[in-house]
Amino acid sequence: MLQLRVNGEIADLAPNGSVDLELVNPYLTYETLFSNSAKLPALPLSARNRRLFGYQDLLQVPSVQERRVVQQYYNGHLIQEGIGLATVDASGYQLAVVQPLGEFFGDYQKVPLSEIDFGSIPLPATLEPVLTVADQDAVCFPTISNPDFYGTNGSSIGYGGKVNPYSSGVYTEGPSVPMVFVRWLLLQIAAKTGTTISGTLLEHPQLAKLVLYNTRALDGASSVVVRNHLPGWTIPQLLIELRKVFNLAYDFQAVQGRLTISLTNTIFRAAPVKDWSHKAVKGYKKRGEVNRRLQLSFELDSSDALLKDKPEVLADYVTPAGDEQTGIAKVPAKLGTLVYDDVTGLAAARQPGVTEQFNQLTQGWQPRLLFWNGLEDDVPLALPTLDELSLFWLGAGGLAETFWKQTEAFRTKMFYVEREILLNETDLATLNFKEKVHINGVNYLVVQVTVSLPIEQPAKCLLVRA
Image (tube, rainbow, N blue to C red; front, top):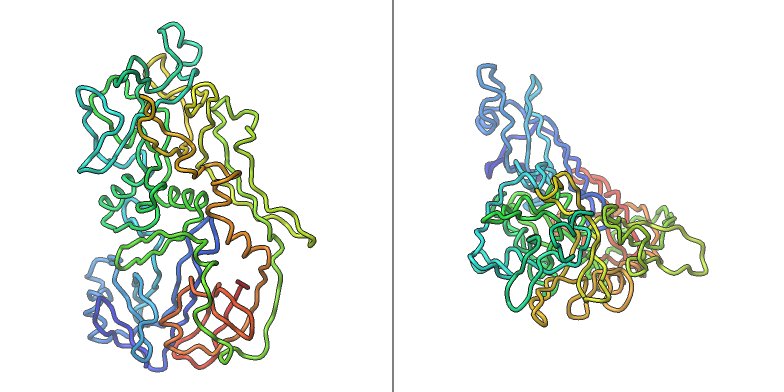
């Protein structure tokens, strides 16, 4: 009934052994990425197991925690797969199995983007608004209004107040600052880490044109060293911050090394898929959610003088108060955007740049998002808006309206139910945390399932009204 495969081969199990599973919904939190876990009994020191684990029980064999693909089958159904790490003692092999989101990107998991070698892009003799690599838009040079780029020293060198100044089809004298396309960066991350990344951020017509604003000047360099223009965030930090802006859902398939990106709102919009009414045990415990209103906010870059007094256009979005008293769930995002210069129509900042000029290499900056708009009226533009989509929380086409409405409606009526449910191996094998289940007139999303294999008791489930 219960079968464990290690790197595709069946392992020997101890008689009457059991497996404790904890399955967790990864789509309902924004500050971390949850994964499933399993607690296995010790595997006996049989001849087969010793071979599968490289005879690690022998003291003459170096202790190497090799990662192995572990699959758990119950009555012929694949219940879980992940990466296993084994230790050994006199009782046998102790195997910890997780879906290792903490190790998904391997050696690059904890390395800042600014320290990963993504290579360099040669500059053409005549600088162009967009530089491509293998026919993919890689970096662009939008004109940005920033009179403070050289601090108080700009006037001494005739600085005109614009980064990447452009006129009559060519870039003119001024600081050159490349902005990296988010889509291209994700593809480089995938290539560097041996993973596959697909979905919304690469396919959405507007989101595929997102670029990361930075203030690092080229200072006469002959090529763009990509990492110089990336933040000191790790890859998971970047993914989490992108998620908080666009309410993204991440599907990690750790064994296959595949990440698929979609929109969380589609989860709440969908109809229920399964009816568990006949599986639910009669008793239950219901509890409310204290914080049912949303507050979507940006953590502003303190080095930008235009943001010292928070501009109205960058105001938070807060779910309107209803008749019932409720608290607020805050989603603070670090990836904000720039404001408009009303005179020039450019994206605008007032902050010192990172440049060798006037010893400004120690200046800091916080990454922000802009849409590449292309050349308009002989100006290369990256702006907070594109095709009626906005990077501000508020207003028509804003982030709250476009990406958070279904999530907001879900939260306003949410409550939790702890309930035992008679799940079988088919239910576990086909469990999809994106799918709603129906129980006696109410639709739910599954938050957590705790169950032991072989199944002898009902699964303990935490559900949330959907």
